[in-house]
Length: 304
Image (cartoon, rainbow, N blue to C red; front, side, top):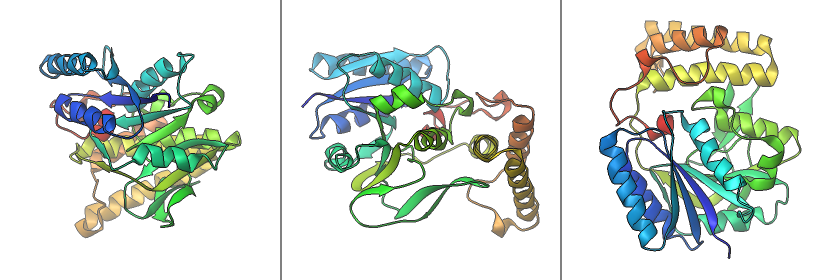
């Protein structure tokens, strides 16, 4: 079996990243790693380089791409995927994950086996075990609803970002992640483009994965989710739908201010207003520095 390419996007968590490499290397599928570093601080980058070098010396196929700045998950993923696409001997699929995931059992083989019955499969994700299916709503963007519990392929609206597989020939056709998103909603945007071109998107029940670190900067997450959801809805459904989504966001803010019990788990008034403002002003890409964390310990989901 040819090695399966694995792209891991890293920022300031070298221990988690190296442990993730080891977990992937223990899968039954042979792997070839591309680690994309989103401009980690020297105290993280130096041991990351040493850890990558030691694993390469021990026979693991691995290379490190160092980006000059934290470009976010989507642009960082694109850098690794371009490296994959440029290789004439690339595997049919490329795995994409942040630096802190745990694929359980034979997750990669289970996903590849499930895709055998779907020749038009372009994107698929592993199962996080919550029983939910990702769907895309024309007004609300990406969301989840109760899904099937049957093992194997389940058609969904978009793949979640904990562990994805992307088919090389589909990427040749539909392109890569839209880098305006920075992080959040880029998977849904790519899935919409894939489905418009006749490709399929799925979740593989029984191919288990766990995201090990769930800490986050609430301001940054709420800002990106607000801004990027509006962009996704506007790109998918038009300005009227984005306006309705904005009205819903304002109603959520008003209700959350009046009654704390109605607030969702991620809620920050200033972040939501900033996200709406920057959507209207067409300010995309990296978030404003005022909301960007200064320490390395915030969610990998954002730094991805």
